[in-house]
Image 1: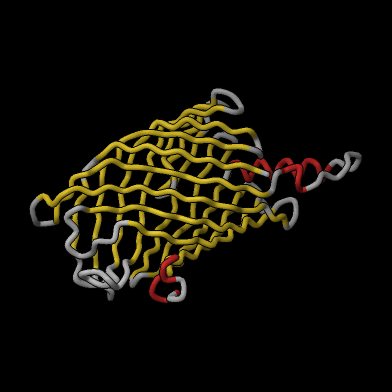
Image 2 (image 1 turned 90 degrees about the vertical axis):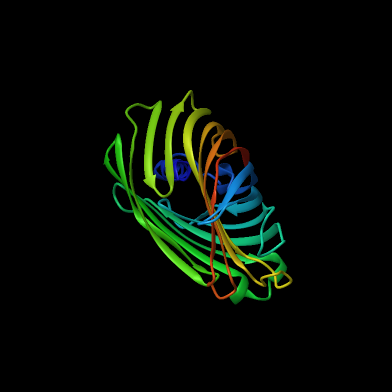
Length: 295
């Protein structure tokens, strides 16, 4: 979000200088590609109201491509396509044996600073299982986000909005609410439910260190060749990490992090969203990295 604001500010600056030659969109590296990887160690699993039942591992990787599409000097679209693959392996799973899952995500983000002292993001996403691309009703998940940030003063901002999803026999809507505070150019404190929790320190214009909370959630459906066909499952956990971030403005971003996942919940339902099996996931260490390259 902060990076997009800087892009808009740069474009607006060039546009307001009548003597300067008009810049090309390619000066701002509008096409971006990259990927992310996260791996969580083995975590103990307790069946709700039952005994300890084995261990669970979770790993995820994705690759993405998106483009900056200007509407004017204050508003932009970001169309994006993304491949995601994850491994979710509970070695005592009584409902299904499948452990590797893949889906493609199509998304469109709208970003604007047209309203004074406001930044707004609106995004829609659609995920579809790569193995069942022709069965969108059964294997598709739709999600949406509306997120606004208002400047109270140069140091304080408040955040409002909502996000939610619909698919796999379920739907949820969550409010977005929170604050961020930047007492100096070096420090940033952010507490925005359920999006971002961090303390950041800017060493210089390129390097940043931070302590972050990382929520993780995957909701998916298995295939029909399972002990319980087309099971719906949801994995949800939260971790805390030390994060190192490098950015060459508009061109390159690299992020590496390591921390401890405090666990969470994992449930499985039948294909109609009933007959639930709930478990509690214990803690485990995790690590990850991400890359974003602008062309």
